[in-house]
Image 1 (tube, rainbow, N blue to C red):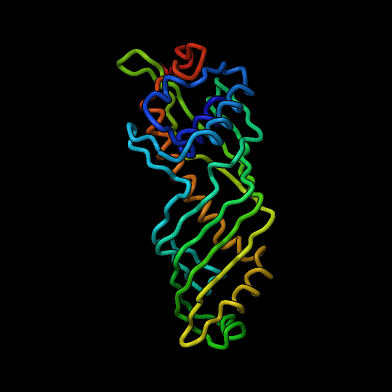
Image 2 (image 1 turned 180 degrees about the horizontal axis):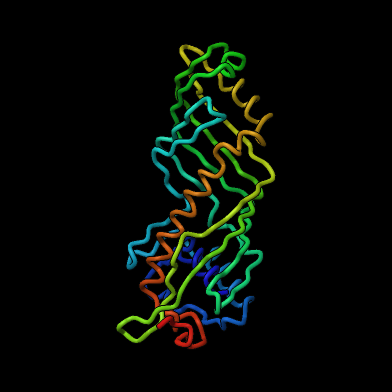
Length: 257
């Protein structure tokens, strides 16, 4: 139950100073709504300062560098310098917690995630001949991709450990398994230069008319990148904050011998 809130809490929330840990509201592992309320309050009320004492930087916007995706086996697009915005406004809609199996399932809803950045691309295929008039292309431009109404279903395996200080801590033992769905993707390509021609308008028309097919090619790449950051940051949070600071119950009975 608490894993879902704290996973995203540690990644998409940003604490202004060390006193934040002392101000955490404790929740019972049986009180799901308490955790959701705590999580949502953090998402909306706390700024984007990161957690300097845990070496955690703000991730909304989340910086991405040299992330490459393949579009329809025709073009490799590399975002050289970009950002993903919108994670801090995501909401936990559903979750279940099994302390015996040490597995939590959760559903996270993001009204909109936006990817913006400079990109370069290149490739060759018969499809490009009909679309752009040539069988191979190389170029660069600026892109904005808005992913609307994104729903992610995650499974989070964890274990409870006791450190030498005598306190219990949560430890994630594997990367989350997930699937996702979205209602719409909107593309805004600018300065798409191929040779001496600006093909931005043609590209936008094609991309926005075929987004359902195209998003299968690269949508997962951006979700994967977000979860990659989440997992790294969650580890740092859990490794530094004992469960007694945010969970009412003594979790010692769940520690594996």
